[in-house]
Amino acid sequence: MQHLQFEVSWDKALANQDRQNIERIFNETKHLNSSNIICSPIREAINHNEALLVSVLVHNFTDHLLTFNNTRLIYSIQGEIIADKAFTLPTIAIPSQVSMPWTFIFPKDSYTSQTSFENGRLEIL
Image 1 (cartoon, one colour):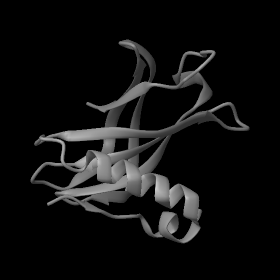
Image 2 (spheres, rainbow, N blue to C red):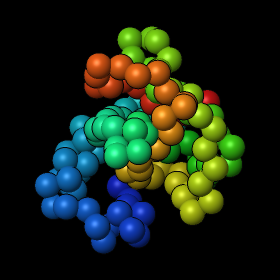
Image 3 (cartoon, rainbow, N blue to C red):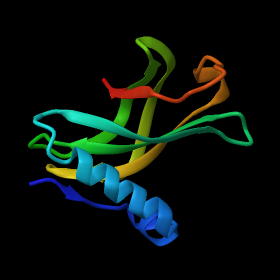
Image 4 (cartoon, rainbow, N blue to C red):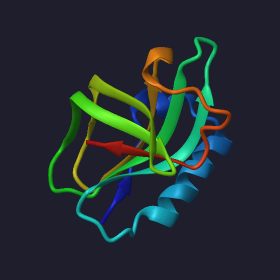
């Protein structure tokens, strides 16, 4: 059975409204019939450095630990790739059958500017 887990810094800093939203998304998506890794969208934004922030709930439905060591992620909208970057995140590891929220930061030079970044899909390749 899938479990929701927060990384320590998220658990401390997360606003109550954001936590409730993540818990709602988890409850709506935790029963997806999958043996893969699926990212459920939480929100997208552009920060003060003009980086694209893509927050997702990463569902590790696999039987192995998910780590990010030069792992390529793409963000697409209606099939068009908007952002593409390899991530190395030594502090994050998502155990088997665990869902964890995370924000992936695509620097300005790694994405194509859009009027809206909503309704996109983040894929771990």
